Amino acid sequence: MSLHDSMVADFTAEINNTDSIQGLYNVKVRYLGKKGLISELNKRLGEISPEKRPEAGAEIQKVRLLFEELYGRKEAELKTAERNTTLFSEKLDITMPGVSAPSGSLNPVYKIYDEIISIFGAMGYDVATGPEAELEYYNFEALNMPKWHPARDMQDTFYLSENVVMRTHTSPVQIRTMLKQKPPVRIIAPGKVYRSDYDMTHSPMFHQVEGLLVDKNVSMADLKGTLAHFVRQMFGSDIPVRFRASYFPFTEPSMEVDMGCVMCGGGGCRVCKGAGWLEIAGSGMVAPEVLKAVHVNVHKYSGFAFGMGIERIAMIKYGIDDLRLFFENNLKFICQF
Ligand code: PHE
Image 1 (tube, rainbow, N blue to C red):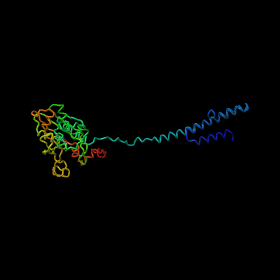
Image 2 (image 1 turned 90 degrees about the horizontal axis):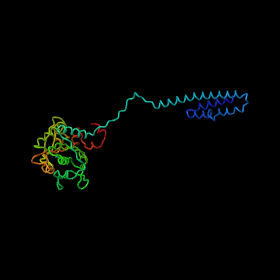
Image 3 (image 1 turned 30 degrees about the horizontal axis):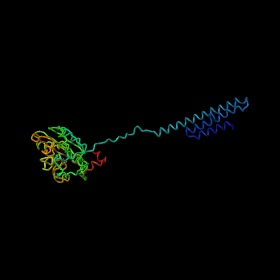
Image 4 (image 1 turned 45 degrees about the vertical axis):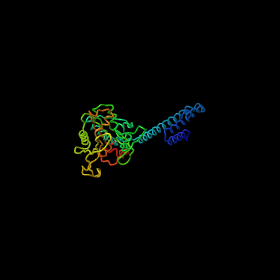
């Protein structure tokens, strides 16, 4: 075996043992590079006698061409293999069904919130707002609840400072609105309210909607008609509404508003605790003390007001018995509505 034959054998063995392009390239450098074996042989041609030199040179050239050919073949083979690996690993089945992005949904409280706004909006009510951190004066005093008033105990108040509270109801928006706007006034004021309370039917934060209408010749009949219309729109046409005498410092007279139980149709069930009625709002004719506090002429104007718990409406509408569910942000619950 000539020197050249053994070189070809070595070269072939080396490239066959290589399974990466980089490894193959290293072999090439060693044999075909500037300082590789072939160059080395060419340099040594000078040592050979001039007569034999052309033949020897031609022989080296032949080996070089053979190396290049073998190299080229192996390189093509490796590149194909590499591309196949990539293609396989990045394989994409475009016939597979897509994954749809989950869409968000409104908390049921805000569904009802929006529905209330649209029902009263259709009756000509504007939406009014006020701050959640409220002056004690607007939350209590101006609503005929001076410091000593026992009714303050009805609402467990969060105090922020001596005269700032987290509003315990939306009624202070009545005061803020009437201080800005002369009658006629026709607003609802939905929003968050705060009381230190927590159980199945109470949460430290919940939502109320206040209603206020002040104009000439406003009567209790207007109040009842308005709330009856609201109940019909929200729950269905055959649900009755009734007033029950009650007490609030800022209305006179004051009434609790009940609607017929949607569960049993009035016969009495677990939801209405056998009464056939569900309490849905506090209401009354705006007390003269309140109208005076906002400089409205009580001889010319009268008004009605009501306040409803929005969660309460949502619980009745969707048949939910634990108020805390609204605030736990469990998607399985929230996304049902
Ligand atoms: N603000 C009262 C409450 O939170 C509800 C109410 C509003 C009653 C307006 C009468 C008139 O309990």
